[in-house]
Image (cartoon, rainbow, N blue to C red; front, side):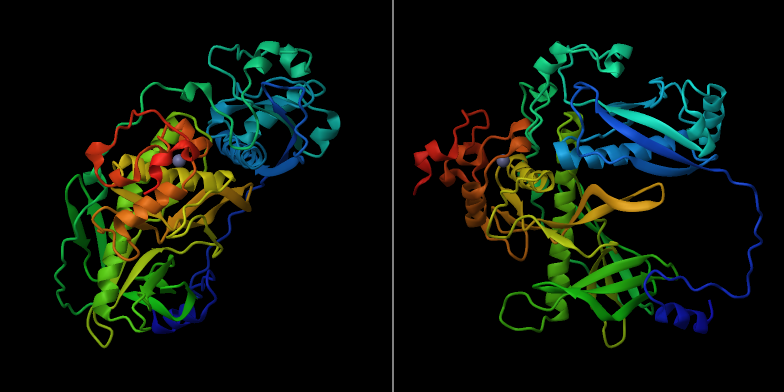
Length: 492
Ligand SMILES: [Zn+2]
C-alpha cells in the first residue's frame, strides 16, 4: 500500500473505502430475475382466529439464486422482531413457525432448504390459480402466510397441522385452554417448570486474581493482549507487534473513559478503543500505569461476565424462555510500544454501527425494567449473584442494540451487546466501582424478580438474610422463597 493510499484512507469518512485506481474488475453480466415475497398475513398458529392487529404486510426482495434457507432466516428475524415487540415471545428457530401459500393454504415447508427461490417459483407457477393468482405471477410476487407457534401450548396438547386450522374453523378449545398468558414477558412455557435448579458454579468461577504482565520493549508500534480464563487461572496472551492507527479525534466519552476509532494493520475493520481520563480520585489526569491496570481489570471483568453470560444464555435457550439475546463484545487490549506514548493502553472491541447506548441499571441501583431487554439484563444480574453463590453481582449494565438485515434492509434486532460492566464482589476483586459486600447487599435489597428470574427458578434475593451475603456456605438455595415485603428479618 502506498503512502498516498494510506493518507486517502485516513482522510476518508468512516466506512468509505478508497478504490485502488490501477485495478478495474471486469463486469460479467448475467440476467438476474428479481422477485418479491409478500408476507401477506401472520397468524397465531395456536389461536388462529385472533387477529394479529399489529402486523403490516412486509415485502422481502429476492433473486432466483437466493437460497430458501436464507429467505426463511430473514422471515424468522422479521417474525422474531414482531413477536418480541408485541407479545414478548421469541421466534428463536425455523421450527417456531410454518409458511403457506396465501391463496391456497398449501404448505411451503416441503421445499428443501437448499432449494433456490428460482426452483420454488418454477414449481409454484406450474399450479397457477391454485397456489398463486395470475396477477401475482405477472408482478413476480409470492404471497404467503406465516403461522407462528403462539401462544405456547403444553407439549401434550395436540400440535398437528390441519387444514381446518388454516381455514380458521376449528375452535381448538383444548389449545386455548392450555394457552399461556400473552401479556408481555409474563408468558411461562410450562416445559420450563422443572424440579431441579441450575447447579451453582461457585465463587471460583467468578473471582480470579490478575497476573501481572511484563512489558517488553520492541521496535513495533503496538501489541494486543487477550485474556483467557480457565477454571482457576487467568492467562494474558500477548500478540506479536502490529501497526495500529488511532484517530486523533475522540468519537465519544463517558463518565470515566473516552473512545477513539482504531484500525489494525491494513485491515478496513474499525474498532473502538477506550482509555481512562478520570478514575474518581478528583484529578482529570490518569497515569499510563493506572490506566493500564484498570483496563486489565476491566478486560478480566468482561471475560468473567462472558463466562457467566454463556451459562445464562444456555439456560434461557434450552428452556425456551422468552428473553433478549445479550452478548458481550470480544474485547482485547492494545498497548503502544516505544516513542512518546509508550505503554499507553486502550481497551478495544469492534466498532458498533450505532452509538446509542442503552442503560439498564446503575452501579448503585438495581434495574427494575419491564421490557424484555431490560428484564433479561436484570435477570442476568440476579443470575450472576445466584451462580456465584452470592460472592459477586454484575451491575451498571449497559449496551448497544444490534441490527439485523432483512432482504438488504437494516432494522433493529433482538441483540444487545454489553460493555463497561461493573461488579460488586465479596473480596473487592472486580476493580473500579466494586463496593464489595455493601454493593452485593444493596443489589439484593433493590432487585425485584421478574418473569425471567422466575422461569430460571432463581431464589428471590430478599428471601435470604442480608447478613449472609458472601458466606456461600450459609445460604440454603432450596429454602422456601418468601416475598421481599414479608421478610422482616432483612432489617438490621
Ligand atoms: Zn431476580
